Image (cartoon, rainbow, N blue to C red; front, side):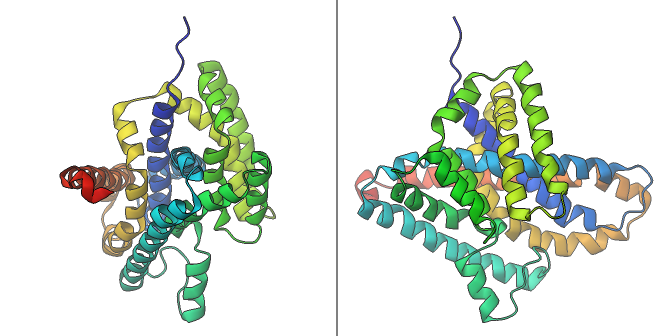
Length: 323
């Protein structure tokens, strides 16, 4: 008898892989590769290649998981959806964004490459935040969009959002979240047909899709979407074959883990970059081998701890008070 895969468990594992990949890509690209290396072995090149894979897989796997978990929101009445989800998410987004921008301005203004020099640039970030700052924003608004477009074919909605990346990079995260919300049958089919043979075939498709990232004239936002959608079946197949409690726990901490990324890396980059750049080759070789893994693990662990603390706090709140 063939065992039916647990799609929820696979998606949680996929989110764990995606969270680690997205954080590692950021750490390597924005911090690790900025160090002035004086070592001979090409260790940074290895991390650069690994981060490239993580960058392609990270956001799609993480957001598809979050989209799948948000499907119930579309069934809520409009009043409940707005009051219990949209408003709290947008409020949390504004608070988190304010804290993040303050930390960036204080420690590392150039970390994201997003200038905030005047009121106009600040309003631009508030209205259409760049992908790295848009997680809570799209989590708040995409369920509303999907509810409004319930009579429109799912693939058309995803296509329109993909086209919207030509106008604003904010739509990049919205595409993958919408895939998780709308293409549930297709995701289930990918998980159910996961096998080693399909892993190889889907890996080849992912490599072809990722090739658009190297095309200079291809719009960056749309290239990210194309590469991510092409890699998604490979990532889900990998998750189906690599299921484990640790990865699933990381996936359950996807939102807090991702939200910790920039606030943690802003001061960390400020402190570590100048100090590690002047170290000798012996110290740098050790740093080159382990630093991205250590920073990634620390940020992910912080997200897991926040989830555990949140669960304990909610468990102590009387049931009547939560309603």
